[in-house]
Amino acid sequence: MRLKNKKLNEMAISSAGSFFSSMMTLSKGKSKELFEISKAAATATAIIEGILAVQRTLGSVPYPWSIQLQQRAAAAAAVNVANIQSTNFKKGIDVVPGIGRGDKVSAMLEPGERVCTEGDKPGVN
Image (cartoon, rainbow, N blue to C red; front, side):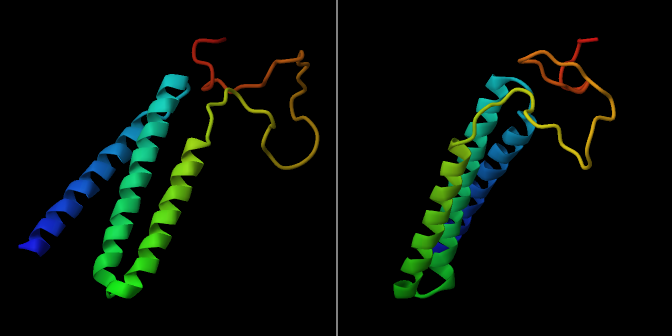
């Protein structure tokens, strides 16, 4: 009976993780509100994955030795959550990516202006 409850619990946690992962993917976009939704979903997913990692150690290693694995899994999850929480919403780019030197198309930019692709600013001609 206990094994059945454990499996049901893992399935419930796993499906919640899948939900938040889907939310994170759907909410990727250009607005700050969508970024915050994505950040919350990524945080929830990382916490759920951390819980699952700790639970998996319970069945994989006998008791006294599983404590160290649980601590490592919990610490890794905490670092992952901290990394997600430290991300900030940014608009535009500061460095043009690519390989090589020199401009392919010269651009005379004013201070504070940035180069954007058509997809970055819909409706701007």
